Length: 349
Image 1: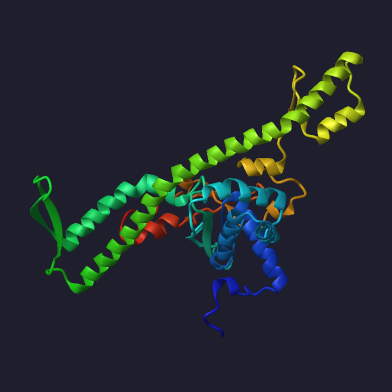
Image 2: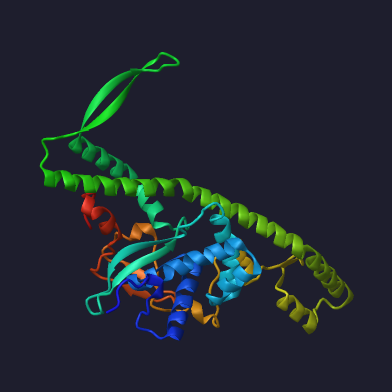
C-alpha cells in the first residue's frame, strides 16, 4: 500500500481517461450549479482543480482560458460563467474559492461511502452564510459560557494617557480548580467555536458584497450587450417595417428564418428586440437550463443540494440534475450535526 499520495494525484480505481472525464464532469457540475454533492474522495480530488479554474479565469489570458476550457464540458456556458459572475465575485479574493462540508453517508442499501458537499464560497446559497444567519448568536452565547467556565474575569481600572478619561480592561485568568481532563475538553470546544465564529462572521461580511458585485457586473454586461446589438436591431426593425408596409402584411420565409437564427423577437406592437444567447446569459449570471444535447449537465452521481433551511429536515427530498426527486426517508443530512453536535449547540431533529 502506498501512503502519502496527494488527493489530486489519487487514482480513484479508474483509468486515466476515466479519471479525466470524471474530473471534467464534476467541475462542469460545480461551475453550473455552484454547489454539488459527491463522495469525500471525489470532493478532495476535484477541489484543487476547481480553485485553479477560478485562477485561470481571473488571469484572463488566452493560455489560461484554454486550460480552463480543457477541463470543462459545455464550454460556451461554463467558461462564460467563469469569465463573468465568478470572476467578478472573486476579483478581490486571493484564494480559497471552494469549500467542502462533510455530509453523512450513503444509504444502508448502498456502499455507505462518506458524502461531502462542495460549493463555491459566497455563492447565492452559501451554507455557511445560511447557518450564520440562524446560529451566530447561539455560538456567541455558547462561547461566552465556555469562557466563564474556563476563566475568571478580573477587571483592571485604567486611565487614558492622552485624554485622562477613566476606563477598564477585563483580564481572563485560568481557573485552577478545574480537572485537567475537563479543562482540555473545554479548551478544544472553545477553539472550535472560535474558528466557526470567525468563519461565519467573514461570511456575513463577504456574502452581501458578493451579491452587490454580481449585480453590478450583470448590469454592466447587459448594457454592453444591448449597445452592441443596437445597430443590428435597428437594421432588422427597418427591414421589418419595409416588409410590412410594402406587402400584404406577411413576412417571407427567408426573413422569418433570419429573425429566428439571429434570436430576434417581434412583440405585438411590431418592435424588434434581440434575445441573449446561452453564453451571454451565463456571462451575465442568468441561470441557463441544459439543452437536450448538453450531456455533461445531465444526471450523474452528483446531486444539486436544496436550500439551507431544508438541510435539517429528517425527511429530505433532493432533486437531481435530470429533474428526478430522491427521497432520503429517515437518513438525516448531517451538516448541522457535524458543525454543532460536538459543541452541544443543538440536536438533530
